Length: 128
Image 1 (cartoon, rainbow, N blue to C red):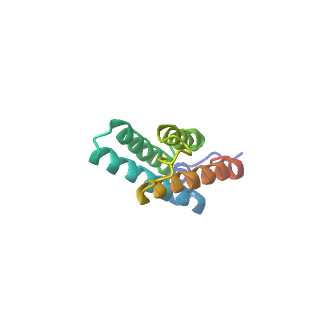
Image 2 (image 1 turned 180 degrees about the vertical axis):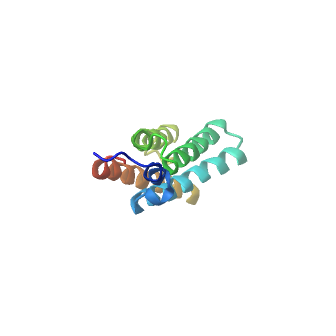
Image 3 (image 1 turned 90 degrees about the vertical axis):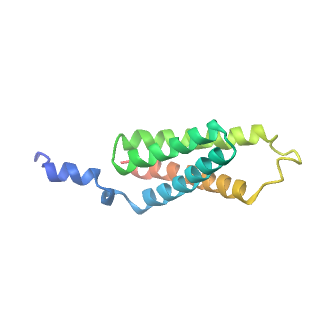
């Protein structure tokens, strides 16, 4: 076995080491995180701000390869719980829950897509 060089170790930390599917996940996380930061600031809701910060921390960790596999795996329940909490908070299929704004539709659609992408990454790449 040949020892890994400093250049090879650094290459794993480079954003260039990410597959296109990771970049799709990053883009989706940026959209949802941005929406949460915006809504949290506009509506003065700390839980939304915290969720937005969580997405940003996850993005930075993945790009810098800081526990990438664990971050991707934790991203699945992190995002899925937000979808579930939104449904609980809005009564799931009550008439009020069906009155979505375009921002809400964009966020929930983005989050559903993000969960799907993260699951594929975990199953296909082992999140490496």
